[in-house]
Image (tube, rainbow, N blue to C red; front, side, top):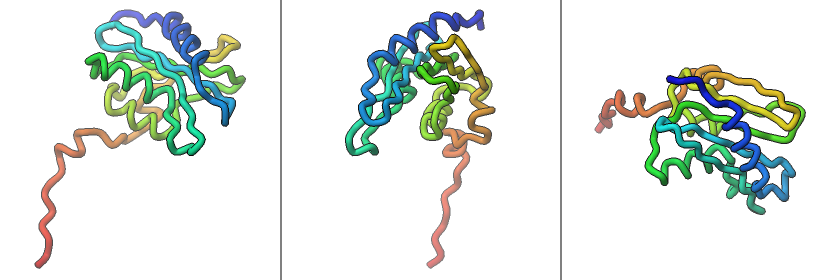
Length: 143
């Protein structure tokens, strides 16, 4: 794998955050995912008055890439204009685990130019992945 262009991912995530719809939390988030083919896809959080209808930036970016035919990714960058660097939430970590390798870099950056990165394995050890479904056995019912 060639050297990742973190600056390009950071700028794409920052641009996506500018489009966030976050009237309730006032917590805009932008994400850029780097597909295996080198293409960058972005997403932002889109909140909803029912709260449960809110969709995170990570899932929006991954969904946009999937719509474009991508299924494997090299890296993910989260941007928030917060002083504390923000990793993906729990449900986003699970969705990331569906499409990224355990050693994939997941990074967070902010408006201060700070950046931190983790591997997916660090963020979600022992992730529930499709391999668990493939290994399942039929459970017989007692009659």
